[in-house]
Image (cartoon, rainbow, N blue to C red; front, side):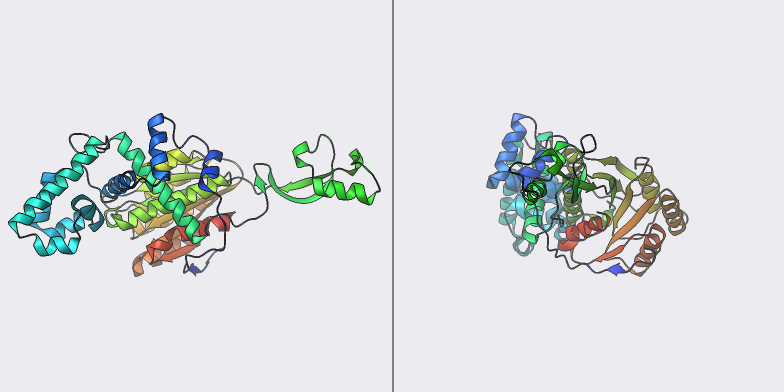
Length: 403
């Protein structure tokens, strides 16, 4: 669809989603394995306030690229230059650790008694994370803390999908053998017994006056095969994505992985800054993708050309749909001529059968111009996003064009 139009997403889809617990069981790998992980999952599902809040705090620290929870350093930054500290840590994390609103801190930050209370609250909050085994004595997130953050972000996105009515559009049964369509005479050896169309077989027997279904009455579903669908989600993790942008980008990646794997397709991941930070070939291993997404931290500039070149080699050889979905908020800044390098990479990917779509978050004129050229070469779509809350809907809209 060369020269395809720009989509202005509404963020609303008339679709349905299965219950999360049922879908998780279908996915490759286990979301939780150890007894401790099971306890964490139970706490999140049962909406344990402390566990959920802890998970949100750790996830937000990762989204803000905070290296460690060190109360003395964080307090010093808050006191010396609160506005700068607010940009560094984000309002959500500051509120969670201090239990004060940002506006209240701004108004009282110069009062000595308030400073003492502020530091004490931060120390208490961080000590609590240590006592619950989520961060170590130096303030670095431990494995248990990362798992809790992962579970909380996963639960949040599933709740969001349900509330928006997003998910599977199709009502026909789908399985790894294809979709059920017309019914034809059952031929042993050609069809499996699970393909028997019961209603059509009974109707045929009745029409023929048989009191029981005879072998010659049996009908079978013919299944249409759509072929293998592989999607690589390329997520910009440059410095400008820090905070809310990267949080919503992660959730959109979770939504894409959940739906595609639920439909027995495969999702890969490329996280890029000035280089490719992480690359996962298309897979149905949902836990692997989920943990990789949650662990993404923003830093440095952008190199789209390297991202496309890396992604095109992740796809498996053979027939089927191969699609690269790039999410970014800026034009590439790495290299002597990043624009030309990006277009050459897009052309090379299309030559290998890879289509490319771009989701641009508040792109400027230059960024949108380049994005249009990329999707024209890649025969995909360009989506302009201004409302981050609609990002998961946009990602799923692009996926639905493949399915």
